[in-house]
Image (spheres, helix red, strand yellow):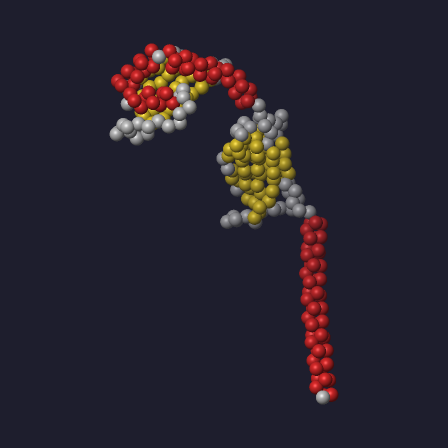
Length: 256
């Protein structure tokens, strides 16, 4: 245990990424470094060494020294406390921790407005013929609220949500689903509330207008009708061409 504690501790201060141990009862060992702080900038720096899921020892900046929690780890901790190079490095890391606190606080205090998309998708295994999806992308902080409104009133039935999913770079995304049966003249809205917004933002679902639908239907019908005429013309042309060839062959045969 003493060898493992020293080996992992040395990894904290060297560029080595490997640590080979010849301890027969070893299962798993790892080191954890914490830089913990509060909104008032109170902080402390902590290094911890675990082996076989047991905390063997740690350096805590509030104490300013290494502490061992087993008999062997205590011996190693005493040796480290007498080594000024290790103590100076720990103090240096604590100073780095303190220096980065204002940067982290500034980063955490900023908010990023979500980009929102409202769309209709095909209903799957639902008693309703339609499903709407309200998606919010790339927002920070994580807390957000999506609410469905039908004619200005909150809709809670047949509504489901995903968790806030990480998108990378500290940003998140979330998706909400509304299974519904369309009603003539109704207004469906997705309301988004987030720290980046001065007030809730409303996104109305705009179904395809009937005029556009009719134009699409007429255009599709015209295309199909044109294809029918084209195929019929090709068949008629092929038959005429075949008939003319057969007449020419018959005339040549009778002449002979």
